[in-house]
Image 1 (cartoon, helix red, strand yellow):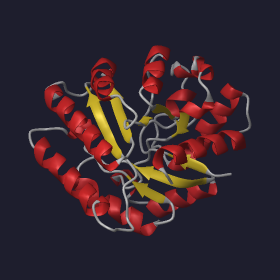
Image 2 (image 1 turned 45 degrees about the vertical axis):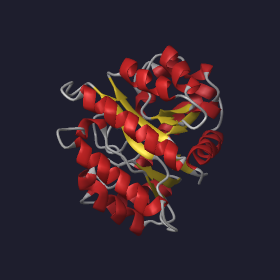
Image 3 (image 1 turned 90 degrees about the vertical axis):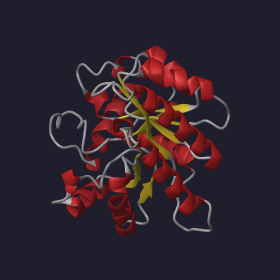
Image 4 (image 1 turned 135 degrees about the vertical axis):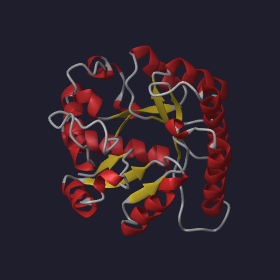
Length: 262
């Protein structure tokens, strides 16, 4: 059984003490593919280091996280563009597999909403240029995210709506914009809500994720999350879809290959 974690921050400082052991636990749980989102330029070196350690298993994204869109956001966007160009404009064995995570977050701070919108659109256009998927972060900003998404909609726009926590209407909208739904620990929460309607969507629209070290699934809720806990998410989907965990792993891993091209 091969599980794919489509969104995990395995380079996070939260794993400084036990990164190797954490990766070992994940692989023993069947997680063999780790797709790693960017945050900002300060984390680029750490991302490259984990990729170098696990070249067969770790696949990187490049982007500017919306909560890190600040006064210097234009410099950060330039960094994103330069790093994409270094790998994708040249004959380079090392690639990026998505532009992410990008989007709008109004939970922590609304100060930079205009800049977040601009950064989101700019990075969508970079993804289109390089024919890459996008990976969307959306927190308390569904209207704002869909406003940008729908204006950029087309056959060259596709990707994953990471950590999907919206309504059934939001799910339909996301799928209509060529997005898979990234399903993680929230689906195991008693008040997570998405478990009530997810069965109405075919599994072809679903990919699995942890968002480690955040949003650990039940029974680890409130603790540090890690990629080995992806099995708990797969087990919950097994209940929802009345399929074996192995079948869930197979279908969602294929969905990840369809998105990322690897």
